[in-house]
Length: 403
Image (cartoon, rainbow, N blue to C red; front, side, top):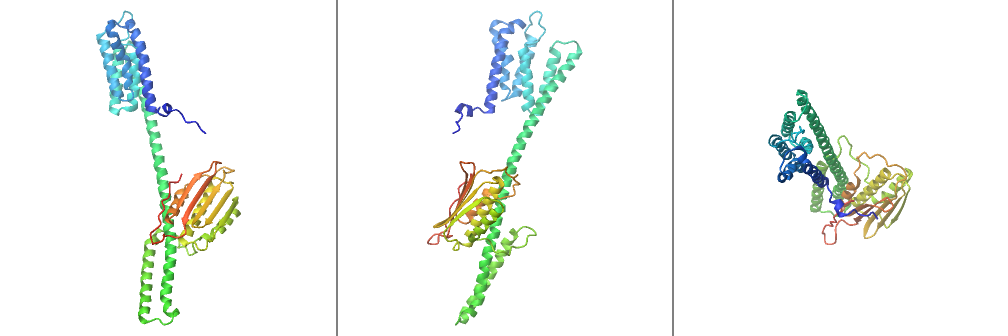
């Protein structure tokens, strides 16, 4: 069993690690600035910790508010350069630690601050360095703006790369969610088309039986004949409305399906076809499948069909075992071992587990799909033989989340 990492490691978020790093850098800068301040500037001993803190501690604002940290650091640098005398032989207006802090904060401003503040920070730092720092004439005054502009440009480039990466991740998540939603909608539309075919078939039988009953049954009275005619007319009207509402669910240009819809008894043919296609499949069927309702049998067939397709696509060459038991409920178990060859590239065109779950739910059952310890996968569907419980209450079984 894989050992779980300690709680303190799991709590180390990138922001927390950055904050800890900022504190460490600030403490290092302070520990250097304080002991060396008397070598560069004439500062009373009591004031030395405060001056060193102005040089080191603005770095702490690098993440939370880099513009404020830069303003404190730049303002204190200007104050030190104007108000605190230098030691003989020292031309630096402020400490090197202070210069490093300003460069770090300018980079942080380029990473996080709005564009106007970035321009202000660059111009202010360039003006401060260009006028206060020692250098060979006017050439140094132009060198600082160019060097600081390079730092800002690098920060802006890193900022753009991070933002682009975040947008790419968000777009991929949105695309994945849209693909899943589209797959569910397509499968629901397919279920609706199948239900349309089943209902239309039975409604057509009702119309035929109502129209032929006066000729098949002896002694039909005129009142009964009129009742049969009314039943036939009502059934035809209902059939036309069903075709009008659900017929639009067919794909554009797709002709209506005239072949009978698959039934539970057709599963053997599905398994034999998979074996002829090269799938290493074995199956066991227990119980009578001829009494299974058409809608339930159709859902069972589609679930088995999608499971075998997923196995061929994601675990090619894996042995497949199918167990189907018809008892109080229909229980279908399809399991496969790990694939023996590389999986085929997915085109995201299938309906997958979401579609199978929708099938089971539409039939009033449930479906559970999960990985197996040997690296394979197993799908188990449980569908009721009857669409309603005794007393006429509808059977509603919620499908659990599919892992």
